[in-house]
Image 1 (cartoon, rainbow, N blue to C red):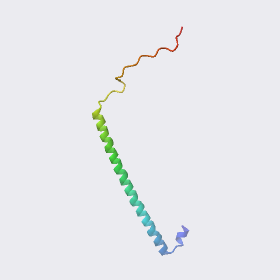
Image 2: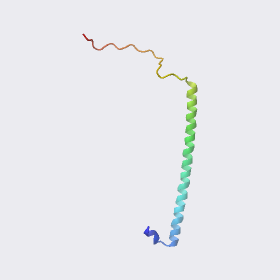
Image 3: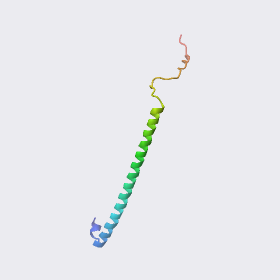
Image 4: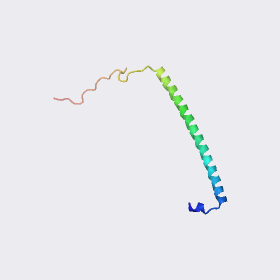
Length: 82
């Protein structure tokens, strides 16, 4: 801070212009990144919505506890109690 106070007015103006240029460049790049991120989010949400529609239309809902498989025979006891 003390070093900035010792600079001449012309040097301070030059530093101000450089900082403003850096600020505008970063602001623009941040806006572009946010726009790209938002575009990707909307694209992925559309894809997920389409897949949800396909899944709900393709497969009828089946309760989780009902199974169509036949139960296998129980295993024989390993040991016999007397």
